[in-house]
Length: 278
Image (cartoon, rainbow, N blue to C red; front, side, top):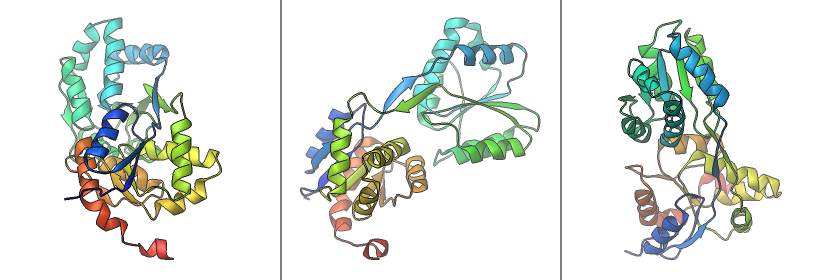
């Protein structure tokens, strides 16, 4: 099998950029890896003050952990203040949005309930509505971007008290030159495949394209590219940004994402969607 067969593949991966480039080359693609985001830890001082006060007063009934990295940051800082806070958390209903936050909880000796696939905020919302009663308080740890407004609105409409806690924000990387080159290459039609590992990658890519005055050209070219997503949460976020997802990795791992795209992209690249033709 020729896999990518020389297709030009764009990845917006940041933390594992070198590994992504190696994988694309392994599957006979020509990689362009442009880091699109960096995680910026926020000052948790005020957040932890309020959370501690609510814990001590018994005003927290459930905590939803939306990301592995955010879970570790939050629990590390909380335990540094007083290790007994972890004991208090064991008496609460802890909800994990998938395997990564669940594993992060385990590293702190905590047990949580993982929501069912596809592990999006919709499943978290549904679980909280099913398990909590009106008047109870759920704390939601955010993941890079603010918690979705429809989620907060629907939980509050169900009579729940909801606090959304920011732990970190996703910003542009310090060096945006590779991202700028990727935007320009996309706008020029020089790329064939886009691999997405998170919805934030797509958001940052489109925002940066807009800042360079290339947004319309990039959107037009993306309609002719094969776009592959690492999983349902990523696909949903990209869809909300107006991107069509052609392929989705299953299981939702980076290696599977690249392999799936390499296997199917050459055939898909030759097809023109009705939207593109119009």
